[in-house]
Length: 118
Length: 226
Image 1: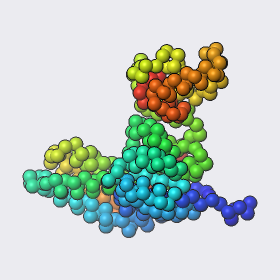
Image 2: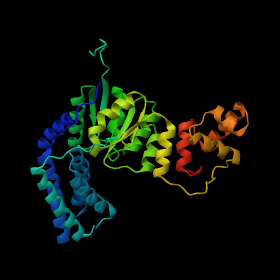
Image 3: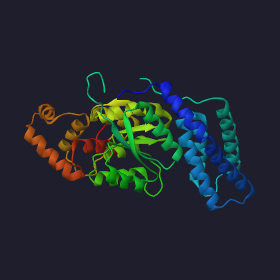
Image 4: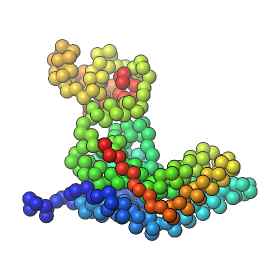
């Protein structure tokens, strides 16, 4: 077997990303709802668990598609949610807003899988 | 068929990740290479253990954070069951301590999700019997231990919590450098038989059963200076 070209991998991942984008947006919506509940003081364990899962999955999947900054932002949200039962509302809102902007950028640019060339 | 007329070996792969998007992306990358056949997908750790037992894949791609059974616990269960599957962790992030633990549990490599473009190369390296750590193929224990030791610094003074003698600690130090019994015997001016006897005592004291486990254990527990 031989390693596929990076272009082939990029094209394959681009196709998966186009199919998966609605699900990624849905995950972001979960985070946004949680941030709003947090700000209004109405968040509960169920919405927090849902947000944690959404952040975890966004962190992993966005990195695969080359959206490293968005992945890193989702990882920060995941870490914040993992820190304790009541994350800082202002920090959460700020991170979710940052993630929204980064996800919008994914509409206009295709990520490039990171490759370490040694 | 390749140019020699020999049909290339197709490695079978099981993908274990709770995120369907990740599983689809991995399947897609492997499909592009043409050298891998995905024989199953698991959405949690327990399912991964069950499917490994059932389908005997050549390679298990295992996420660290999964419901029901975390990745490292799933790996422990798979190793304990005596499976010969080559496990490669595919994760968003991992620290040196987790890499050490994974290697102790029998993992053959680590690929970060953001470096999924390296996946097929990593799997080919692992299928050849090498390890894949920090984006490169590694053929022996020495390199792995040295890399991880550098990334996982220990106290400057070795800690002796296992009743090891000074000579035994000396021998462990040689083991972490990848020395063979003959080299150790020559360096310490003792016979190979004596080295073997010391090793047997060391294994009994620390509860390890082979040199790789001992080297990784020594690094993790600060038994030797880096």
